[in-house]
Image 1 (cartoon, helix red, strand yellow):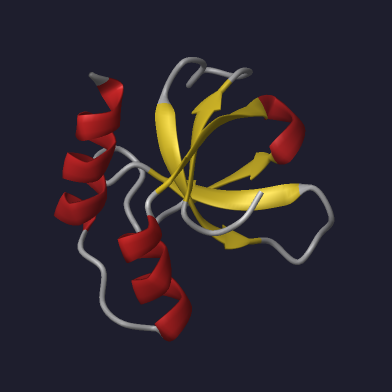
Image 2 (spheres, rainbow, N blue to C red):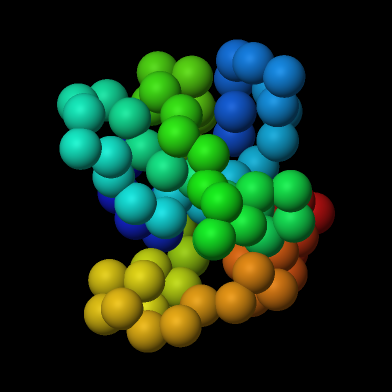
Length: 86
């Protein structure tokens, strides 16, 4: 999984919740995810990649901003994920 991927949680209390991958963790198989609502960019969740299902879609504009180090707002992530939920 790469930064900008739209994923669903398959395991845990948050099963079925949609997230955006915001960073790859230092340990193999883990990623940091945020949804802009419960899990913000200031407090992303560390998830095992095995517990996530890749939806097959990317948020390229937000991914580019994250990789360049530009500021990304939680509201951007929240509204972008809401568009994919429909």
